[in-house]
Length: 139
Image (cartoon, rainbow, N blue to C red; front, side, top):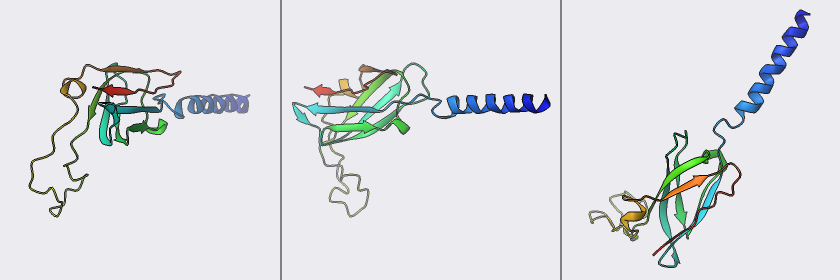
């Protein structure tokens, strides 16, 4: 009897771990495209900030008009505020070296209107069912 109780306890613990340990945040892959004035954004950043108390919030680099947050770093279902940034290419492409051709210059100008970043009220909802593809066409 004692062995049977021990076995059932271990079996229950295993089931709980398998169902809860695999992905407790229920993350989902997020993908999409970003266009500015009809053209793909060559280089930028998109950020998703949680609005429903989710334990996830993340961003991705926009490259040649597309972005992707893989499932292992993805977002839990719920609503997120979206912010999109894309400079004018004078940032030095992440090169903070004093040898950068842009060293000592004023940082590049943000090309995306404030209504898509600092003053954004854009909200997208990540769902368990998906697909969670969010495209943005910025005038």
